[in-house]
Amino acid sequence: MRILYVEDNKALGDAVAKALRVNGFTVDTFTTAFDAEEAAATTPYDAIVLDLGLPDRDGMELLEALRHAGVASPILLLTARDAPSDVIAGLNAGADDYLKKPFNMDELIARLRAQLRRVGQPLSIIFQEGNVNLDTSMRLCRIDGRDVDLSRREFGALELLMRRTGNVITKIAFEETLYGFGEEVSSNAIEVLVHRLRKRLVAAGAQIEIHTLRGIGYMLTRGVS
Image (cartoon, rainbow, N blue to C red; front, side):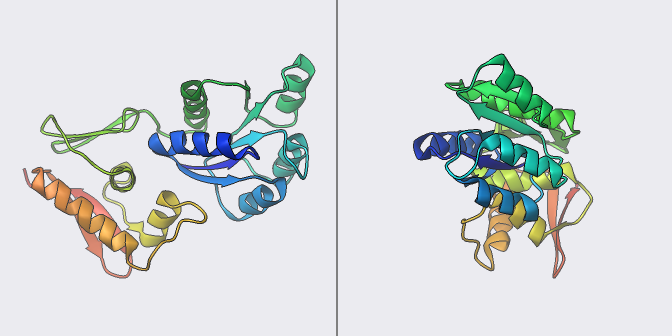
């Protein structure tokens, strides 16, 4: 899941972005309303985490602008403003949830997952194909009951494939899901990632197969047991 995170406090922004990535999200972080609005206009985000105290524009104005532009992604506000009138104004302007600073990181992630579930995103579920068990909430991959160590992007690639078993996933879809703005993606990054993931699965005796459709993308199927 790809998240747009708008926060002008670099230390806090880095900490939150790191926590989100550890929990399997791809995060694009911006420090100004201008940059965030530009990003939201060109990228379909699964959710937006928005600080109200921005240097170039009040976050409430950005919230209203995003909704006016037709951005339907769930928006969670982070702010030190805690007056009931501020909460009401934020919700009436189109926010889906509101979290006061300082906040607990686990609560932020839980609230974000809850919002994504409400819009139909199948989060916090377990996928099972053959002898491969993928727990997207705990970020665990097990094959024949044994834990398999996967990197964040390897896990993300496998999750994307298992969510759409039997369907072709294009290279562009992998790049847009697994990499954020500013992250350099080499021309063969996805090929290398899928090759590495395939080797790990084969070594662990996985009963699934990743097929390469040259010039199109990749597809996961259940292999022969």
